[in-house]
Length: 70
Image (cartoon, rainbow, N blue to C red):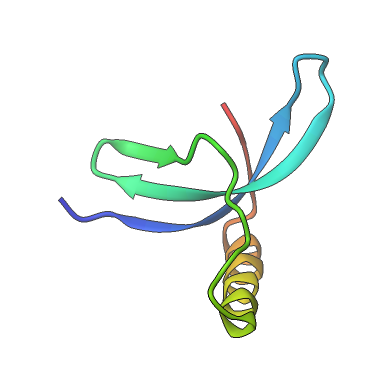
């Protein structure tokens, strides 16, 4: 089974009703959408890796917008 993923900005709510945003990996699977339970971390083996990751995150946020975390 093949899947496609992208970075997804997701809106969360705390148990007290406060909103915050975090980036997750989001997957388009044959069975429907899925995403990582925990937000991603920005890390890499080099500064260039970090730059590339941040550019991809920004591009995907512009492309896919914000989804509510359910």
